[in-house]
Length: 143
Image (cartoon, rainbow, N blue to C red; front, side):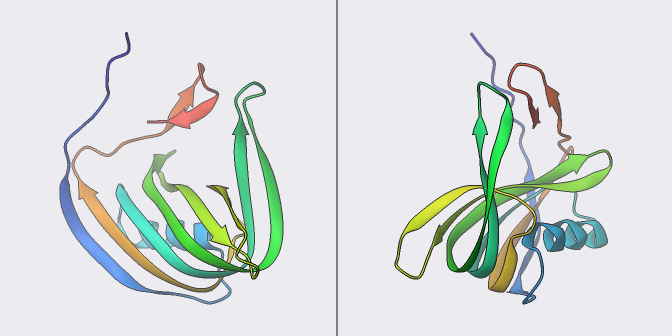
C-alpha cells in the first residue's frame, strides 16, 4: 500500500491579468514566477493560441510523445502548478483546446505554445516549497 504525500499550504498572493500576445506561455509563466519570487503556485489560463505543443506520456517507453500544430486554437482550459527544480520555477500544465471546427484536443503543455491572447489567474501557495526530482518508477520529475 502506498502512502499519500500531501502537505498543507496557505494562500499567498493572487495574480489576475492579461497575458502578452506572441509570447510562449511556459516561458512567460516561468519568467513571471522567477521575477516575482513565486516558488509554489497553482494557475489557470483561458484565451487563444496561435500554435501549440502538447504531448502524451508513453508509460512503456517513459517518454513524452509531442506534437506541434499551428492554430488558431481556443484555450478552453489550461490548468497547472508551479514548483521548483534546480532552484528555478518549473511549470507543469495540461491544456484542452478547440480548433475552428470545434474539434477538441489536449495533453501535457510544452514550450512553443504561442499566445494570441490569454487571461491568467495564479494563486501563490505559502509553505515548504515542493521540489521536483526524478522518480525511477515512472520516469517522471515528480514532487
